[in-house]
Image (cartoon, rainbow, N blue to C red; front, side, top):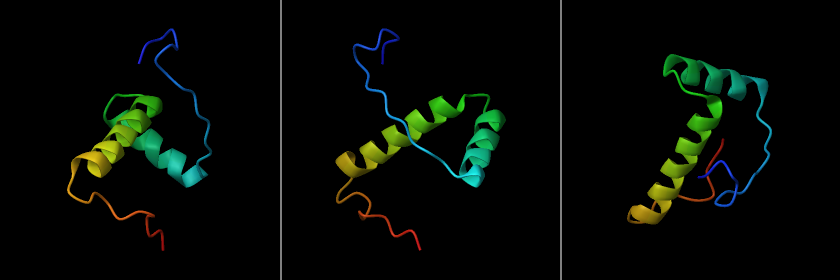
Length: 63
């Protein structure tokens, strides 16, 4: 992803206070930014869906 935005698409989302606090804690513990952490999580999800046999069950069960 280039900083010029030519190979990127911006997307906005909202996290609960608890979700964002957890993301900040994980990012701080690993000396990375929350945005870096989110991009890696998205990459991991895409790899697990596209790369694995069957991938995760979608939609996610969030009970």
